Image 1 (cartoon, rainbow, N blue to C red):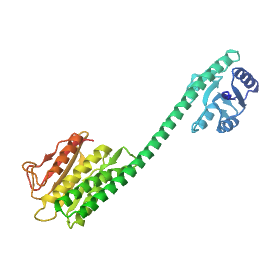
Image 2 (image 1 turned 90 degrees about the vertical axis):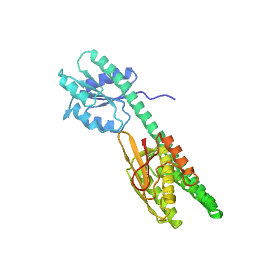
Image 3 (image 1 turned 135 degrees about the vertical axis):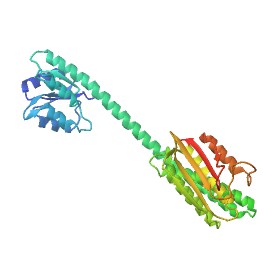
Image 4 (image 1 turned 30 degrees about the vertical axis):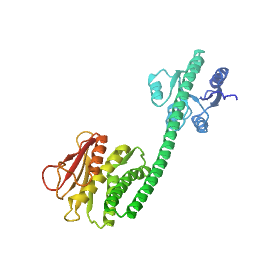
Length: 345
């Protein structure tokens, strides 16, 4: 398959010189078209297919600088070699600032044609590199968009699968009669739902690499509150959280931690009252650190001594915190329990 020769448009109102330029460039393998006015040249450029423009400075009704100005917004504009008969450097500088790749001083000797041919060859190499770069960047953007679409679909399917697993665990919890087993299955269901929530946020987000943690914690709290109300518990879960972009894997760990801490607070903090408020807060700390805290106004626990229940929830919190590079701290004064973590975003 034969490749098309590079196409040059030479804009000059001197027909004699234009014919000489055309012949000289065609001998070097270029396909050359001529235009005698700025309007005709711009019309041809707008049709596409031109690789390099040889542009004379003085044209009927204006200058080549006017042509450069009108070419500025073209998407795939050709390279321009500016041709000027004036020795004033200001004209050449203005042309280069306006987007010309090179300039050639127009003279009556044979050197002009050689210099023009050389400048057009260099400009052609430049425009080919520019176009190759633009093509590569476009292909990268398209590949990234395809990958993000596929990843969004994966997150959608993972969220649906986890929701199905959570529903099955819930059915199993309803089917057993042992209260301890029922409670353990209900807690397992909540953990699964916390992770599923991360994937739901990912496939509804424009950025599949991170989760807006404020929105996620609000929806997680709403789900936990709904679950609690279904069991007759009227505790409120209050969220104060900045919308910070958190990487996916960290968001999943945060979701499990918050689920465990809220569940523990509901179960043990208000054992006598039966219900109360649990507050979740997350904000930016110093530097790149993020502060997370879950607190209640219940009977209080400072993290020491024998834990209530099996202690599985506390072990899960410590394991997830370790994955975040954080340590779990308990408030040692005041009423209620306050559990806090600090980690990098």
